[in-house]
Image (cartoon, rainbow, N blue to C red; front, side, top):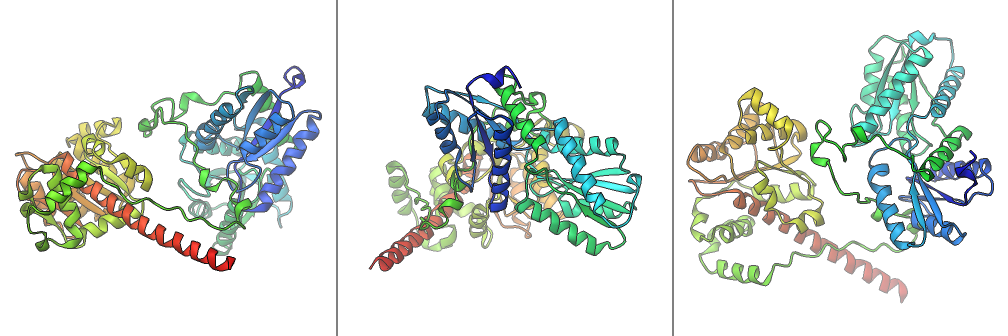
Length: 536
């Protein structure tokens, strides 16, 4: 550890944080071990969420100690969103806050040989404490990973399982995850129980105990009760082991030398990885502001987040006043009135109302789908482009359009479907029922949606079908109108288009936002009243 270790930089160990105080305490033990291995070095630590000190507080402490160079080392096992997005965003903020300090970035711990040694120690300890003797070739190893949205990190869990299976002589290995991705741990345990092994040993590839380890222990206990003829063992997490501390130091030294590299060749943010092409170049934005230092604030009075109501532009407001007087709106279902008025605003023609069809409860189903956080699926990017960005951001609504994805092109080529219809089929496979479908361009997309609803029992939260044109347009709308199994919004005739479909979704989002604003205001008033009463 000579060379880089002799310079006067500080190390900032950046942990995720946990609702379980024991997990934070174990991380602090690991920090103490890092300090023991490198005495005289300024070593601070902070948390992304829940616990204190926060990362900005830890960085401030390092700077106040006199450090003019600080290397941040992610306290995470694998490089996923936290290491690739959240921590770089934090690092950028720290550089802005401390312009006279140079901040360096270290890599995640990853599959370091020392960590493999710790895994072996945990497995041997679990086997030694078990009753009876079972040969390794009669034992299945099940590695329980945290689970992320990054296939690169999830794949590393499989790689770890293979290393340990072959290196230690297990009969087979499987992988399960505690959340986010598949297979979940109960499913993986069920698969393991059916393969005929005498023993299944579960290795939680986690740094510390806490909520996720409790989840692992509960799943293993349930499996042991369900399959009593198979012996289930659970190894411990890595914990505040000196070998883990050594890996932290090695990552810090690499970061100072500019060698803290990630696996960029399979990073979904840098290259077009199969199935994740749309995430190339995604901005590095932190996602932990709402829970930063949350546990330290637990005793403080809660301040409800108030969602502001939708405020239309003055010209938009004036337009809707005119629209209100263009016809007798009392004959329109009050629940559908605003969405219809937005369509009139888009089309510039109040006569379109007579051709519109809203199935009973369709508007309410769409608003509730927005409030539930369902993904909005569009047939073309024009519909996606017409959605109000601020509403999408405020409500946290995700939008997906697969028309230009390579997989959609391949599916279209192999099946003969149009690309818009292929995108709808992919949405069925990708999201199941957890989506709203907004079709504004392609009648073929409506026909495919109707087929999936009838033949595959697809049940999206709402289907909006408002394409424009002369080929198949009226027929596709008639097919959707007769599709009684789902809430649906469409019209008769050839008029429509992507702006129409966008307008309906915008109307749903505005209604959802106004409902949240009303609830938030009521909650805030209740808190203020309670505070005033307690103060008297």
